[in-house]
Image 1 (spheres, protein in one colour):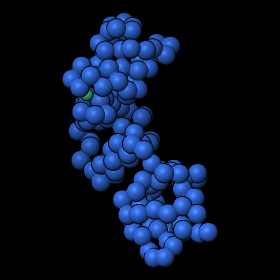
Image 2: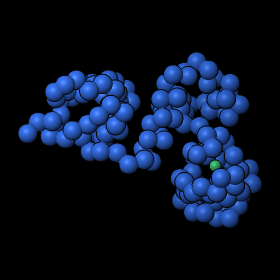
Image 3: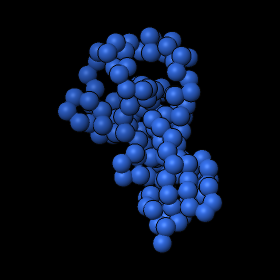
Length: 141
Ligand SMILES: [Zn+2]
């Protein structure tokens, strides 16, 4: 492996292009890239070596192996991607007094980021979180 430093090129996963592409390092953390700029879309983001996958996959991640394995967890992975994209967008903080509509992204103190699937009048919403779907109350005065 060649030495890496600010300014050098590195392969990283681009959150916008959704591919592993050449990036220029713009900040380092220890011996690892911290922030990178995509050479393709010029977007700046935190460094990610590979496509984000569900936890527990870090034991034996050769890049080729990881790429071949992706088909088995497709549903989960696309949701992770959706989550990642949504986390960059504005989203509402969840509270019982808030009002939310279908398709809204909310941030829950305990469960994290979720997407409102169904609004059940007058005061319930079904929200899909990373690992579960929950029913929450809203519109409480
Ligand atoms: Zn890009």
